[in-house]
Image (cartoon, rainbow over all chains, first blue to last red):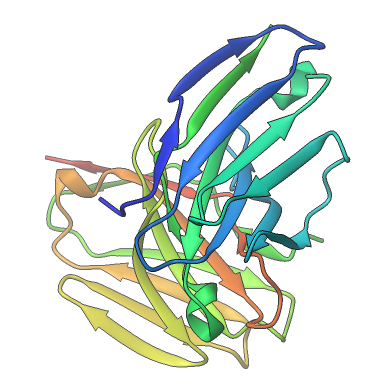
Amino acid sequence: ETGVTQSPTHLIKTRGQQVTLRCSSQSGHNTVSWYQQALGQGPQFIFQYYREEENGRGNFPPRFSGLQFPNYSSELNVNALELDDSALYLCASSGTSGAKNIQYFGAGTRLSVL
Amino acid sequence: QKEVEQDPGPLSVPEGAIVSLNCTYSNSAFQYFMWYRQYSRKGPELLMYTYSSGNKEDGRFTAQVDKSSKYISLFIRDSQPSDSATYLCAMSNGGANNLFFGTGTRLTVIP
């Protein structure tokens, strides 16, 4: 167990709806990254949060947004859901400096968009 | 061209075999190299990480990095049925904030 917890574990939404996914980072970690993993693919970077600020973003549209809270937990929000948003959403936490490259993942939230 | 290439397999081996998993990459700035194991419908579990070139051993697992060839490997000795999973390589340039992943290799160890 990594200590990174995500909720909910599974979610079903319809196209056009909005969704919020949550993540609690491992104790002592102040950086949270979000990834999208489509079936049969490796995870793709969405964005990273450090000290409550976005600290890097991948090739995802603005309808993917996030927050980090003072306790380092984080949310991923997706607006105007599309069918292609169906995927496993992974949260990873990491420490500072070089250690921020060593990321520990939660079990993920499986989102199905119908 | 993808930044990280990994043969998706699937790969089936008998119990006790030595397994070799590999990735190639194109970005010479990558410095951190990781291997994750992912069981079906679970999150990736960090197995090993290496900074820069060289070898690292942990029990039955050995990770190798050859930066001159832009090639990394994971060897699993005395493979067990419990090793059956998808193995993901990942890497980072140390300055950027994200990991670049391969597509994963699905491994089945047959008892």
